[in-house]
Image 1 (spheres, rainbow, N blue to C red):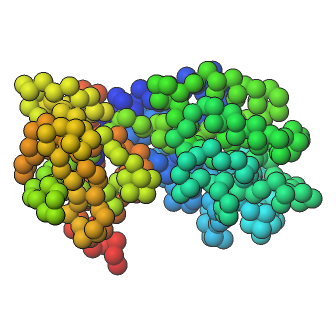
Image 2: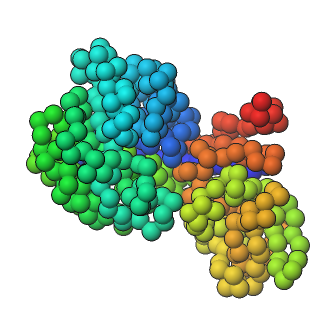
Image 3: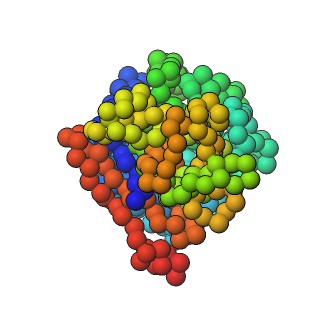
Length: 399
């Protein structure tokens, strides 16, 4: 059966890097739960994280219950009952619009945790400066609903607001953050410098743990902001905590030819189990799992004793090309076209690399396809299964 397999040692490797950046820069490094919320891994991450950022009440509850530390919350809009509970468990609540802020202002400013300074309130800003390449993931595209542009703040009553928040990046480096901050500073620098502002949240999308990420530049920027404006700086990466820490192990269910293509149907679905493959879109790294004696040279994120990994190539690059597809009725539920050094056969294990972030949190039971198990590779080499959903889970969530 298919499974997400996460290496706790790899998670800790990333967490150590992030903690080192936090220590050197003075930033508070939060885990973005929208990217990764597997609570069975939180014991590994907790010593290195300042807390979590949440996209609403459920994630905030998860953070408070399982991670502890600082809980920063941002949502495009809050329901009244949600906001009432968030006032009792969050440490930062950021509002997406002036209308939401005005709607909840009196309730917030009269709350004991706000009056004591335990809870601070902020606004999400839209610097209207795009650095991304995919509109679906760019909060600064024309017509974006995310964040407040500078023109809307002119003359606005911001009494009670003590923080600013921007989030514009997606899988990007330090230079994109620097460029974004300069654009933000141009329009919002005077507000940031005002005595009422106590924190700046620079959001997520930072690939801090990638080998080529310029961590020294990030440290310098954070230090500059803290010294120039006297604010606390928060970063909330998600992917950086868990990039290259896990794989999705799949099995070949069928192999056949049709309409000029050789198809290999796997027991996983791009739509249901790794939707960013279709939404981004992107092409995952794929390996055929072979006996260790074959000596294949692939190096996926998680490797097991007794196995070797033969990297798949571009179509026709290697002798045997297949279209990897899902066992669903969605015609476009295709992972992609890949070539292999040896023919695929029913029962072969295919490994899809780097499938921890934005996969498990996005999975569905579409078409009734069984959900992959969630497994952890312990530092001692043992594998533990922490989640195995079944038919009852499928039926229960459909009402």
